[in-house]
Image (cartoon, rainbow, N blue to C red; front, side, top):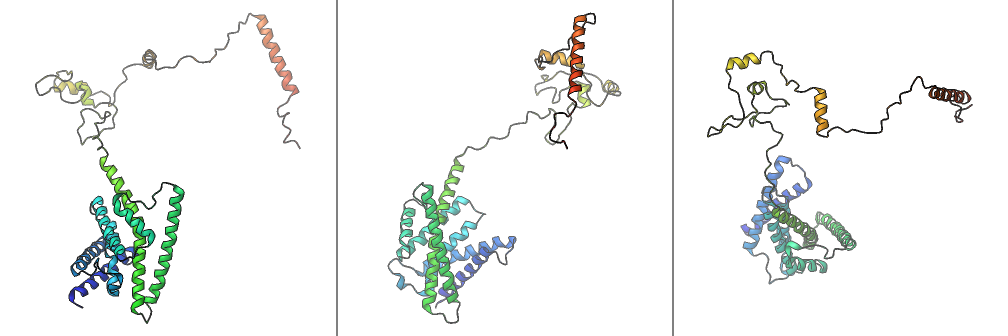
Length: 353
């Protein structure tokens, strides 16, 4: 074994150990997870470079020509793609395109070694035709899509159970080369099975990113019409009336003259002493400029008051009208007789003893 093979094995083992720690979240804090992720990505990228330099895999050989120690390196691109999907400090679209290229290499190599199942081979051919538009279910029928997902979920559970069983045999006291080879192939088969749902999600995410890029940029917020004139950017006031200084000066706020000397608002020239004398006994708030009656008249003129309705005024009774008085007397007498014959609560038959 030369130094390159030893470096590849050590680098791959270190990267896989870090990746498993990230997946399980063991012995990792939030501050150290990003650094661990960066180190794992760097190590797997180095593994990809070493595999290419050492020519471990070739399109002219079969699976029997690959040694048991080198079979696990078939999933190097898959493991690197899984780590890149966790990366959040680079452009998302760039990361997804890199992940697609890694999946293409990984699945293409498995197809060359005839490690893809019949269904996965068909999916790989569809993915090769249009990587960015790949979908697991070629139909839009929700029932068929659901059946496809259920079938793939059951197959994934079967592969995980098989891998767990082989892992227990691999960790036994007596492990032969055939057991290690079966475990590596089972792990690669599970990785291939999980690749296609990831490709489906990546194509959907790329579609959303492309649509978001074509959206028009939101316009800059316009100046709030409710802002008070005369206030600077770093000032704010909750006052509903203008400051006393502006009321004394008769100003609306803002400059009096423009750059050419043209008046921008009416103003009165007074001396400083007169302004102070007029403001000595002035209240700190704006005084009313009209009475309530004047305000109501102004609202009526602007049609701001609702008039009319069904409020009937009480009829004025003429005390000298004897007929009207007799009618009111008879009405009151009839009411008294009714209340005597029907005492309060007489109709309540529920609470009687």
